[in-house]
Amino acid sequence: MRTMSVFVLLATVLLLAGCASKPDQEVAAAQKALEAARTAEADIYSAEAYQAASDALKSAEAEIAAQDQKSSFSRNYDKAKELLTQAKTQADTAASTAGANKEQVKTEAQTAQTEAQTALDAAKEALAKAPKGKGTKADLDALQGDLTAAETSLTEAKASFDAGKFMDARNQFKAVKEKVDAVAADIQQATQKKKVG
Image (cartoon, rainbow, N blue to C red):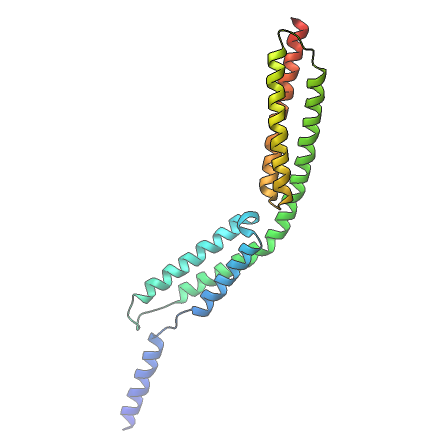
């Protein structure tokens, strides 16, 4: 009788040891952390950390699925739990750094806006002062069209900024400045052409 009890106890211990529990709570925690990171716009302002968290979660889910295919005695969710911990940690990091990164990009966008507006104003002034004549009229008209397009792009960039899309706004302001700088160089060239001609 005693031998039978020991055998049943040993079999129960082995059965319980072989039946690893699925990490449902860890999955939920990682998913919640990733959603919080997305809400903090970490997918935009801390993209690398956010992507690492997302990848770790996907790997954990794949590992869980692989373990689910095994017999209950051979399932081991340790690797999945490790990946889920990693996903949660990276998502938390992404969320916490996104705010600071967003403020940095906002500041950069404000600087880029000032630079683009200053360049546009200077190019308009240079165009207004450029000598007009037969040889330069068509060139100057084309340059005026380019400045008008740049002004429209500047307005669109301001709208992006006002909507809180600071990354887009920063890139748009920089593109406007590059375009205006190219137009200013062309205005200078057209002015020189008129002086020589």
